[in-house]
Image (cartoon, rainbow, N blue to C red; front, top):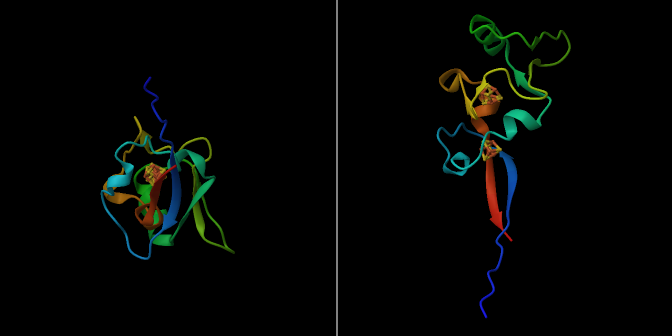
Length: 102
Ligand code: SF4
Ligand code: SF4
């Protein structure tokens, strides 16, 4: 009798020191990170750029980093992909996942 062993994959998020475009770990994922976090921290330049791109959920702060609110899904997420990939904030560029099989 044959038994198939179920392989589970667990993702662990990492914030890299440098941006990484087109990470292979994201290919089978429908942008969980763009829906799982409450917000993305922004520099002032990024805040202004996203405002130019039509962002509606920007949060201006005098005391901490400005933010793009992404709770319940980022407004720039389209069909599981970032709709502003070339212009996405630095923190989005540096966040990747390591996948571990258990
Ligand atoms: S970093 Fe990539 S693999 Fe990780 S949740 Fe985001 S899209 Fe998915
Ligand atoms: S800007 Fe793009 S990569 Fe960043 S949270 Fe929104 S959809 Fe995701």
